[in-house]
Image 1 (spheres, helix red, strand yellow):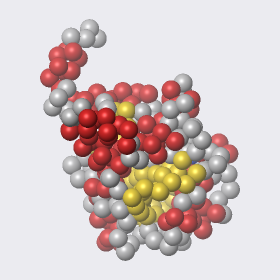
Image 2 (spheres, helix red, strand yellow):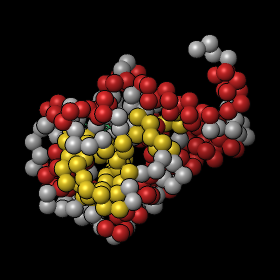
Image 3 (cartoon, protein in one colour):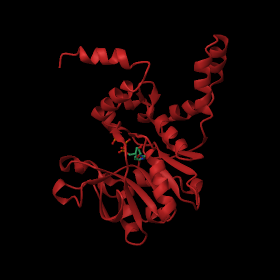
Image 4 (cartoon, helix red, strand yellow):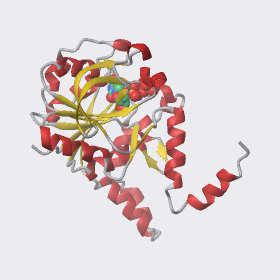
Length: 287
Ligand code: UTP
């Protein structure tokens, strides 16, 4: 079955990015001029996704407004003859089919995904975490759907991370199953470096089979008192094959201040309209 639906959990509180996230959803922070979540939605579309399901929470209505039509703005741009901007604004609201559901309380990523159970139904689906921005030739999710097509089991995106940083991630234990591919035998959420089963950290892209909902329903609060997706996947790994793909591409943790700055600079340097002047500016910095 084709991966048609993607779930975007966006109900987290974004505490690593306070104070800006007090009133502005983290997902709406811009890299140059485009909100984080739009980069991920564009990756989803380029990977064949037809339905985007966004899990929102209190204070997140800016996300819905962003992907909705904005008649007032469109009329204004039309009157002023700003056709390029008009097209850009219209294109955003016509990107794909959106639906929204709310997570009433931030009870964890696993709980947020469970909120999408009815909208997803009985089919495999993709999950995108909006803070992870992946810049790659072939969209990261497309690389993962290729693996899914072959094996028809859940697929996690993984990346090698230095040991000293491993305790910020879910980490897999796996056996080699092909080119940059592993079969997952166990997962640990945020291990201490000495306890990490490998240096392969789970990044914010997943393809999950619908069995995951049953495991999420049976998952008790874990680290930080949250219902963790990693714990559900750990239970699932014993009974259903789960694959992990070391994807090709540069990944930025834009939910973290330093990661956000790195992503901003890298993406700005790729923009024809900004590159030359920006390079001049950077060269002139006395570091
Ligand atoms: P994070 O832990 O990265 O996001 O969760 P956060 O909680 O918003 O940010 P910090 O750590 O406090 O700075 C990973 C993803 O899961 C979503 C977040 O929105 C983010 O996309 N999430 C997390 C939910 O949707 N609900 C939750 O209860 C927790």
